[in-house]
Every structure is written in C-alpha cells, then in structure tokens.
Amino acid sequence: MTNSITIFKREMISYFYSPIAYIVIAVFLLSSGYFFARILALSQQATLMYSLANTQVILSILAPVITMRLLSEEVKSGTIEMLMTAPVTDFEVVFGKFLAALCLYLVMLAPTLLYVVFLGWVGDPDMGPIISSYIGLALMGAMFVSIGLLMSALTRNQIVAGVLGIVTLVILFYLGFAVSGTEGWYVPVLQYVGTYDHWEPFTKGLVDTKDVIYYVSITVLCLFITIRTLESSKWR
Amino acid sequence: MIQVDHLSKRFGDKTAVDDISFRVHEGEILGFLGPNGAGKSTTMRILTGFLPATSGTARVAGYDVFSDSLNVRKQIGYLPENVPLYLDMRVNEYLTFRAQLKGVPKKDRRARIQEALEKCGVVEVQNQIVGTLSKGYRQRVGLADTMVHDPKILILDEPTIGLDPNQIRQVRALIKELGKKHTILLSTHILPEVEMICGRVIIIDRGKLVAIDTPGNLTSKLRGGATIHLEAKGPLGRIKAGLEGIPGVLKVKGEDESVALSGARTKTHHFVLETDKGRDVREEVFNAFVENKWVLLGMKKEAVTLEEVFHQITTREAEETAEPLPPGEGPAPKGGIKETVSGLIKKIKA
Ligand SMILES: Nc1ncnc2c1ncn2[C@@H]1O[C@H](COP(=O)(O)OP(=O)(O)OP(=O)(O)O)[C@@H](O)[C@H]1O
Ligand SMILES: [Mg+2]
Image 1 (cartoon, rainbow over the protein chains, first blue to last red):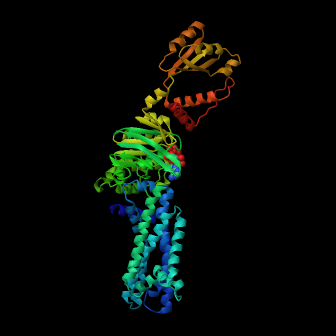
Image 2: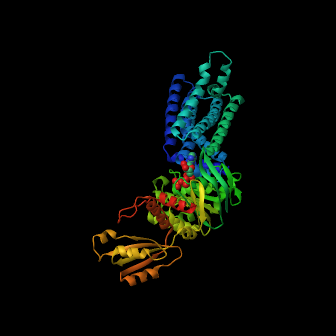
Image 3: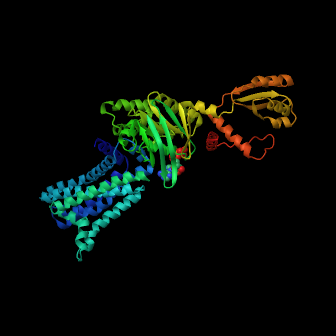
C-alpha cells in the first residue's frame, strides 16, 4: 500500500509538470461553465441537475485523456523495466496509477463547487440532489478512469489508448439511449450495461445501490484485467 | 550470491538464452561478455524478475527469481540497457521516488540519496529535470538509482555505453569502488573494461555459454605466446627469413616493406614476431642479428591484452582464408568488435 502511495505521488508530480493536467482542467471548466451558465439562464432554476447531466459526455472524453499515458508510456519508454524490477507488485503499480488519475479527475471537478456557492447566493438550491450528484460523479469517475487505464495497458501508443478509451466510453454512454423506445430482450441488458441510466438517478438525488454496484464492479473488473494484462506482458 | 542452472529463454522459436549455468560469488565482479544478440540482456532480465525463464532455475541471494521475485528484487540494484528514466522529474525527486519504492526507511533516505548523488557525481545536477541531462549524466543518475537502497547485488547492463572517455574512466573506477561492498554482474562488449574491472568473465555467444574464467587465464589460454616488436636496419628479406628460422618464432611480419622495396637500405624496418607459448626468443633474435651483422635498434616484448588476442585471432583467420596478399599490404583490417569477439569464441570452441 505504501508503494501505491509512492507511485501515486510520482504520477501527480508528473501530471503537474506536463501540460495535460492544465489542459484537461481548462477544457472541463470552459465546457461545464458554458453549460452551467446557459442552462441556468434558460431554466431559471437554482439546480445543478441539468448541467451536471450534460457533463457526462465531456467526462467520457476527458477521463481517457487523463489516463492514456499511465501505462502505455512506461512500456514505450522502457521505464516499465525500472518500475517492475523494483520490489513492487503489479497490483500496487496499477492501484497507485488509478488513484492518481482519480485524484486529478476530482481536482478537475473541484472548481464546480463554486457553481454551488453561486447557486446558494442567487437562490435556494436543494442540496440533496447536489450532494448525490457529486457522489455519482466520483463513482462514475472511478469507472471511467479504470476503463481508460485498461486501454493504456493494452497498447504502447498513448494516443491509441486515449482514442480507445473515448470510443468505449462514448459507446457505453449511447448504448442506453440508442435502444430506448424499442423493444426486445436486449433492451434492459443494454440499458444496464450503458452508463447513462446509472448516472441519471444521482442527478435527481437518488443514490441507488444498484447503480453504486454497477460503477464499483466495473471499476474493480477493469483494474483486475489491467493487472492481468501487465502480468501477461511479461510472457511475450 | 547468484546461482543459475540450465537457464533457457525462448522468444517464439528463437532461443535467446540456451541452457546457461554459472555462479556469481559474494563480493565478486563478474563480467558478461558477448557480441550483439548474445543473450546478455535477456539473462539479466530473467535474474531481475522482469522476464520469466522458459526453463531452468535461477536463485539470487538464496531466493528463487520466479517464485520469490519480490525478495529477489529487494536485494538487487538494476541498471537496464539504455537507462530508462522518468524524463519529466528532477533528479532528486526521481531518486527520492526510487528510494521510497525500494523501501529505504524515511530516516535514512536523505543520507542515502546524498551518498548516491555524491558517489555518482550528480550533486550539481540534482535539481535539473532528468530529460535535460546529457546521456552520460542520465547514466550516472541510473547508477545512483541502483545503489540508493544499498543492495547486496548490482546488475548493470552495459554501464559505460555512450559515455565519453573521461566518464568511462570515472564510471569504471566507481564500479570498482562499488565492488568492494557489493556483488556485481555487469555486461559489456568492451574487452579492456572486463580486464580492468572484472574478477571473472563469462563469454556467451548466441545464447550459449562459451567460457567462464579470469581475464588472465583466458588471455594465457588463448595466447599463442608473446609478441615481440623489433626495429632494425639491414636487408629486409634476409632478416625476415633469418628470424623465421629461429625455433619458437611462429610468424614474422615486416611492416616497412614498401620502403625496403624502393631500395632504401638505410631505412629502418619494423618487425612483429609472434612467438610460441612460454618461450622467450629474445636471446636467439639478438644472436641472429650479431651473427649476420644486421643492426638491431630496438626490441620490445609486449604483454598481450585480451583485445589484442581477439584481434590477432581474427586477423589470423583473415589471412588464412584470404587470397595471398601482395607484399606490403597487411590483411585488411577486419576491425569491428563483433568479429573480434566471435573470433575469440571460435578459438575457444576449437
Ligand atoms: N522481447 C523479445 N522478443 C523477441 N526476441 C527477443 C526479445 N528480447 C530479445 N530477443 C532476442 O533475443 C536475443 C538476445 O537478445 P539480448 O538483448 O539478450 O542480447 P544482448 O546480448 O543483450 O545484445 P546487445 O549486446 O546487443 O545488447 C536477440 O536475438 C534478440 O533479438
Ligand atoms: Mg543487451
């Protein structure tokens, strides 16, 4: 565990030495700020519900950008050899990197708390849905980041890893949408697999165990496959 | 310290390491010598737990490299080929990270890092970003990393490659110094390096272990005898014939023949004599000169270095196989270190 913290710290140093952290944060703030302002102006309601609902697509794009170089770059530059010949386990490496990506993701979200402060100043927002939305964002972030990390383990090219991650997340996002209104046995399956139906309840103030389990289990599954991928890369 | 038994590694149907067995004893500096693609790096990667072996076993400090990899890695400081470092970190940040990762206790950390920085001569660049360092300095940072947790064993893959001559000397001196406290396994293609710093040498070729011995023994085993350099005045052809007649002289090379052919008798000639094992022919040479009233200006017996042995072997091969050369032209220099090493390997196998 201490090794995961050590790796976490290194990745954070690396994030803030590179332009990635700043670019990701800036893009997120610009786009979420735009939605916030537009939606607030249109709805005239002191709620974050609609604007946070919209951030999911932005996050589907930004999360893989955060994770894309985490493992692919290590393999490409050969630093993986230094890393894996130190006394650390594959789990500690993957978990440390996961924590770092999740942390940057949360740092990226943090400034949106100012919107909440702003809402409190101009109106009287219902805090329940706001709090549950942030819980949902954190859980969703864990899942997005773990999927991005897995993609980074699958290829040594970080751009490919980023694109794979974005494509996967965007497909997962539209999966539920695409079938809504149609009928068939696959509809509930795809809606369960898709991310949108799990996210929406959080924006309405509902923290449902079904959704929590969805996010957590996919996160754990992806981390597990990532560790396995890292192990098996030795057996070239 | 390191026990390797019947170790093999295959990549697909390509055998990179083929049934290698050897021991590295505590406190010893062992050199791993072989041409490109011999399997040096692959063996080291197996020892450090980065790659699994296809068959065979290896134990480091008593721990199996496969089943007890974590304990093995705690005992080892490893410098991979090409020294992959995180280019975006500062040198001291990087070493702090590595020291933490390798479990250096917090209270010792500053001192350990300071010592590594000083020993490897990177104190003055400790606040620089690794990516802005020159190749030689990166190499040193890599070395500082290998020793930061004071491991029992250092495994260094071509530690002096890409350094300038001064840095090579410094790094060799450093490795020798480290050898007093640590067991070291290092790989190289540079023969003098092995002679200078290694107690024993392993030579591998295409995955197979060809020889394992001290550099001294290897040289004397391989060496036909000493080389004697002569400087003389007189009729070149007759001197050459005379020298060739001396028992124990294997081969005579007159290096100044072109001058001699132009008829300039007063010009000096250089002769290189290769002599039989364990025979000193200098007295006979001197007598031959006295009897024939040739003028001997100088005579020098040379201790043959490993590298010269290698070179001799290959040039001899070249002479044996090549068309008869016109007088005055020595065998075409067949330079490359690869040829010389493979020449040595042929000789050992013979
Ligand atoms: N990951 C790999 N996949 C396939 N073949 C490999 C792999 N790694 C090494 N090899 C092959 O194994 C052989 C031994 O390689 P190795 O890197 O151990 O040689 P080396 O002795 O270190 O050579 P050099 O002096 O050039 O560093 C080579 O033929 C190489 O092509
Ligand atoms: Mg190599």
